[in-house]
Length: 185
Image 1 (tube, rainbow, N blue to C red):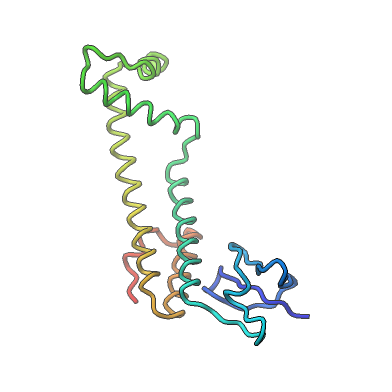
Image 2 (tube, one colour; image 1 turned 90 degrees about the vertical axis):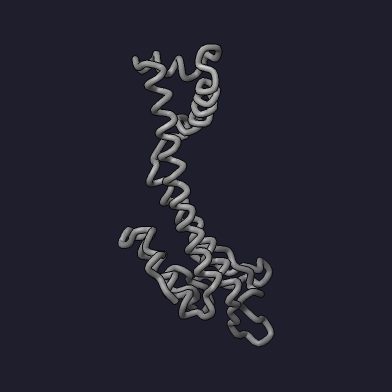
């Protein structure tokens, strides 16, 4: 008995044989990355696969979002505890910057003392690191949005397949996330 599975890893939509059954009562096909409603792709009456380009775009955009989230996490491998302190540090920096004589930043003062550095030195690092982080995150997010825009503009499965292959190469580390700049449809 043959079952239908949508494989989204190599091409946008590839129909392959699998040992995973279609469960009409569950109404989902099994995919490596995504749950997909049967009725979106499988016409129960005609027993034919019908592929919706709009849905394929949505699935690829979802994969792009997840992939770029991993890129952000890998570029900034910071522990959750430290990252949670960044907002506190930056909030205290802003208040301190406005009124250095009357405001004592509790968290940052203790952080500076514990590290054995001057408060002014620490506050300058907080300001500079915040600017660097925001700039890097904005750049990556801009590239993610550009990738999503290319997907939205795609008018054929061939274009989506090309974009999927580009994303796969980025995910494997064979290409930089900036490579979307070189893609033309």
